[in-house]
Every structure is written in C-alpha cells, then in structure tokens.
Image (cartoon, rainbow, N blue to C red):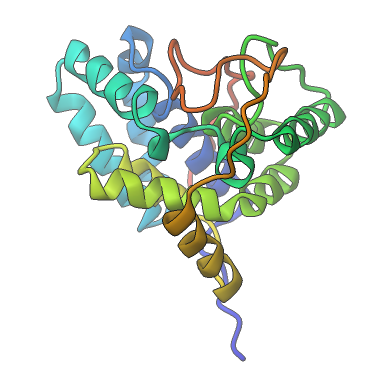
Length: 228
C-alpha cells in the first residue's frame, strides 16, 4: 500500500493549528486586530487547509462583530452537537470523562504548561494552542485520540451551515484521513449520541455543551513561521 506523504511540515502544522485556535475562540475586538497576522498565517499553510482558513477570514471581514459574537453563542453554547469540548463526544456526562480531562491536564503539565482552572483542558481551541506551542507530537496524539468527535463536530457545523465549519475543515485537513474504525465510531455517535450519566466536573470548569462563553484561556502565542 502506498503511504501518502503529508503536505505539512512541523512549522506549517503549528501555524495552521495556531490560526484555527484563535478563530475558534469567542470573537472579540482582539481577534479582529489579529486579522492581518491570521491572513499571513493562512497564506503560509498548504491547501486545502489554508484555503479553508482564508474562507473563514473572508467571513470574519464581512460580518459585524456583534453578529459574529451572537452567532458564536448560538452555535457553540446552545447546540450540544457543536460542543467544542472533545471528551464530551467520547464520554458524555459520565465519570470516565473526568479521567479523560485529567489526561489532558497531565499532557500539558508534562510540557511545562499550566492551564487556568477556569477552562476545561479539552476545549478544542486550547488543544490546538497546546499542539502549536507546547508539544506538537503530543497535541497531534490528543487530536487523533478524539478524531471521531472532531468529525462529528465538523459534520454538525457543516449541516447547520455554520461559517466555523471552514475552521474544522482546516483542522481535519491537517490530520490523516478517517479509518474504517473511526468511521464506525462516528456512525455510532450520530446514531446514539454521547454516553449519558450526569456527574459534576468541578474543578474542570463549565458544563459540557457550553461552547465557549468568553472563550478559551489561551497558552502563550507562538511565532508563526513563514512557509518554507
């Protein structure tokens, strides 16, 4: 079997994930100020991921900030199928989710990074930020471990016509294609939804299903490298 070579070097992966991380945060004036930097970053990312990032940036340029913010809340705070917390898809509201969240925090700690306790560590924007700035290989592993949830989120955003679908398209374009096993997991999630068992998640932050509220607490920004 012929193995397809990835179009992404480490710098390009980090750039794509950093840009996607910022675009998945709550839209505010600071995000708008970053548009020139994000444009340069998207231009340094190979297509199709770069094209997807540029498509969302076009939407960002054309949409008033209050409308962006209202759409973000309606999408990520009010629709469980559009949840940005990755462990929710695999574990729902069960006790197993607490252990999964702990594994995320341990991965961050091993890389010398400390996340604010006000934010759940599995928020997609935070995971992408960690992958871009903390530990590329470990961040990629976390994304692949929750590949089925990522795909379900991408499908939900696409089906609802959300502009943020382009950002998920960019993220998944940086990852290997779905395997049969992952496709089966996605099909089960579509048919059955995440597991249910109401438990508290303190001290991990907001409840599952909350998309972002004020947005993730970001780790330090990397320097976005130019495309080699």
